[in-house]
Image (tube, rainbow, N blue to C red; front, side):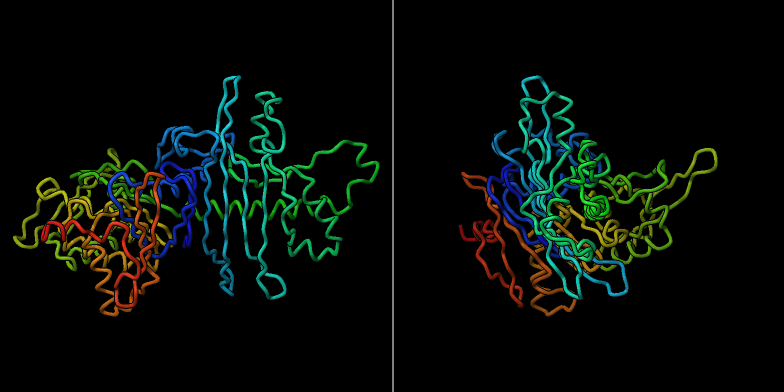
Length: 471
């Protein structure tokens, strides 16, 4: 589970703003306040790590997110500013002890705008803090890598040299150089420091952060014995460590899925063209795949939730395809009040908005699901019932939800007030995004054991209702 996300100089956020992320994180705020920036930060890191570009910079246009380029997304379009992120999460080792390790990553992205006509973003500085097991204790290790474009004069480089250096890093001398396997070699710390800082560390098209080591030196250096005999062994050990951390970060971010604010209306017929999907997609376009491939179990769970939340329909699946057409399914709805089977176009839009959210919560495991406005086109009671669904599924998944729903919040408060065993105050993080003349400010609103607010809302909690009644 992601624990913290910090943002600086990204879109409307100018200064460091830190978010505490919980099993259920709710993001509130007025329109155009910067709420979407929070989810976009996570999605931007995800697509940057999963499909790196050749310069190792921010991938601003990808599958889930299309933002333009660096000058568009940097705060106030100021190219002198760096876009920075910090990300923290718990990593569970798959071993008998089931050890948990706290990991923290920091990213600083800058921008090259050369008069020769090329420009791109690049990772200026990369730092990770990780816990390591040593002599039955967890040791905190700090590792920092500085891009060679920062260390050298890029204005004197050719285009090819600039591009090569954009993915080339040096291990910072400010690190603490503690690695269990190296420690066992009983080598003087000063020598270890030289041996670790000697190689160049590079990102690749597999990992946009440093993940491989490269030793380069002149032949006479070997003859003069300036290379320590253990250098190659230590270089390989460090290579394994940086690759493992890059892989762990990539795996963690691959667990993020995203559902946008407007889901497509359910189609009557779906032609299943893909062999596999991992998410319902931004607008729920892949629900047909899951309803077909997991029909025996998924339909039962969906229809149970529909019944529980008072949705008077049962979903039915009819398979139409054959060997010549490939798999084709028809989605139908049985009206439980009249026992009449109808098509998706015969019912309201609400079902098409809630169905992708329910399917995603069921099919995903150990994931972080980001969803915008899950309450859209839903009756207030059904919005409140969605809170029950998030509570039911937040043990297997983490939810980050941008919402305007008062009913959703009220139901969560009610569950705490009723001492529902499924949820505790620390399982809920409420973020209010407040627009100011100096950019977006994030405020944490804590809940007490009885569901009451421990902190004041910057603009009041849904004051519109009070204003309309008494104003």
